[in-house]
Every structure is written in structure tokens, then in C-alpha cells.
Length: 315
Image (cartoon, rainbow, N blue to C red):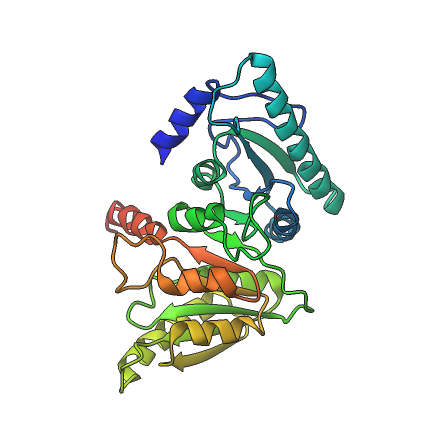
């Protein structure tokens, strides 16, 4: 993925271009990891940007509005002027997004970033220095019937940080966050993210233990699940927690829970999903049809945490 980003930068002109509100940079210079909103001017990206503004405000961290641009035709540009005209159109889209964010939250630190390349590659690159990336389920190129566009799908499958795919429910806030926790491996779940989101929203957290459908005795998995949840309850005493143990199909359970939630948190793939499958069937189903925003936690986050912990000397 990093190679693809480098190749696209070479293709479209080295390190990219700077604009009055957009700037292409290699990495974050501030210690605070920002919320990144992918913005292309579409209605879906406007909804994602509004959601991202609220996230950044609640977390007291900066917001980066990111727009990816590239030459849209199979033949190379005939002149530098033609390429610059396309870049300026991208800059105009970015400026609209930055102005929208600043209008919604005048005191929030908002940065604009105009980056050369495809949206999916650019946003995966941005995710390496972000706290959270938010996008709409489809972009400007998607048709209304498209449930999940390629950018959102690829980003959720390959990002380095949690990815929120924002689909507005059109209903009043429910005051509830839902997290799906795989019973076979509750420690490697989005519980930490879910507790934090519930705290920020002053919402109830519904933690659902997802057991195998053919499991007759859930006691062992339930005990491990409750033990893991209790650890997070001690860290977040202000969060009211409801727990459920389910053996029904995971997608059925989580889609039903999403109908009464403001956010669903789920891992990118399950414990038994093949390693070569970047996005598991449960996550795919939720991203395509959940009635509220869905945040996907990448498995590589747990792998990186485990490696970091192994490097800490004992004592």
C-alpha cells in the first residue's frame, strides 16, 4: 500500500501541490493524532464530515479534511496547464469541505489536505497517523443504489486505525453504542473503542458476546466475556453497560441492535475468518446495510499492540 502511494505521487508530480487551505505533507508534526474525514463534495461525504467534526470536538483533537485528486483520464495530460486545472478543481472541493467544518465548529482546529492519488490509497496512508478516519458509504462516483463503495470497503479492510463508515439514520439520537465482541477472543475486540465512544456521548453501551451458532453451552465463553467487560468497566465507571450473550447469526443480532443505536463497533474480521480475508462477512454486512454509523477496528492494531507489549522489559 505504501508502494502504491509512492508510485501515484511519482505519476502525478512528486510531493504534490499546496493550496490556500490544503497542504500535502508526509506525516503529522503534532503529537495529537487527528480525526481524518475523507471529503469529495458528495452528500455522503458531507454527512461523514459533520460526524467527524463532532468526533474531533468530543475528543479535543484536530480535524483533517482530506481530498484525493488525480488525472481522471486514461491518457496522460497534454500539458501542465491541463493538470493544474484538474488540481484546482480538487482544491475547490477541499476548500468547500474545510469551510463547512469551520462553520460547524469555529473553535476546532481544522486542516485541509489535498493529496495526489486514488481515494482509497490516500486515506489508507492517512490512517497511519490518524486516530480515526471517517468516510461516507459511497463517494461522488457512486450511484444511489450502491450500498458500499470501493473506497469505503478498501479503507475498512486495509486501514491502520479505526474507520467509521457514516450512514445517517435520520432518526433522533438513541443514546446507545453497540459493540460486537467475539466470544472466542473477547480480548481482541473493539471494547476499548466502544467504551470511549459511549463515554464521549454519555450513552449506554450494549456489549454483545457473539458465540458460535452451533454452540450448546455458552458458559465458558460467557464467563471470559464478562471478565473482559469488567476490566473495561473499572476503567470507565461512568459508562452504563448492558451485556448480552447470543448464539443467533451475528449479522442478524448486530443489524437488529443497530436499529436502536447511534454507533456500532465491530472488528474487521472474526477469529476464524481466513487471514487472507481482509474484511470478514459480519463487518461487510454491517457496512453495507446497518442503519447507523459503523466503526471497524483493524486486526493489525491488536498485532501492533502485542508487539509493543513484548518489547517492554519486565519489572
